[in-house]
Image (cartoon, rainbow, N blue to C red; front, side, top):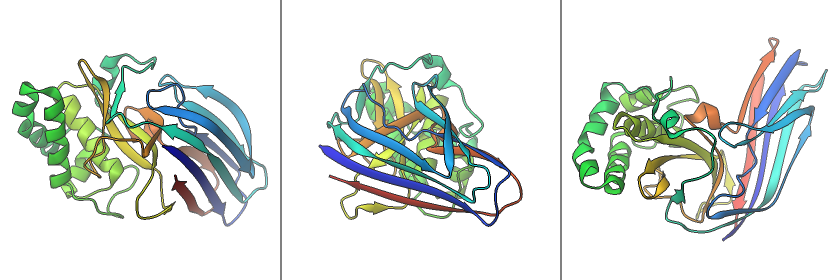
Length: 268
């Protein structure tokens, strides 16, 4: 499938900002199974590129600094990606990080009693067949934590969302990651884009989990949509949790109030 993506993120302030630096992970991954980047471009308004590099997860990263005296910064991304349905199987991949790193809990994915109970429920199935076990675990997460917008935020941990019993795709992915690691499986977060069947305009990018399974390599699981990613998905960045794969992460100085606006279109 050939997908066309247009993504604009704008930060607006009520007064000039003293200093602001944004870390961007917005460039789809090339050279991965099932995904070919035909074209991609990123441009900025109100900010200037400082450096571009590849991090230890092999994500393409750009650092931009807000221009002096500016009260807004916009990041415009667009391009076309050719995708293939591999039923979620990415394979061994080519990252620089060792597998044991993806078994280590982070602040956002440290399991508590709720996640440990979810993991225990899938333990028997996992012992019989690893792939079936993670599918079982994914279904348990979806049942225990129904999708609900506006109930969590980017800093909500997996255990907090699981305890609240509701969340969004970010929470579902981090809960699955936390539970999988508790069961001894390497797991990571994936940020990217998803072609929706009912609309072109979207409010935000998407997120899901990948778990390492012997004989298959990395396999994707989208808890929110109860599916392994197919050719409607575009992988952009990976990390141990959302914070390491977030599309935009930044810091700023000054007491200006901030307003965020996101415009995203994904279409075939």
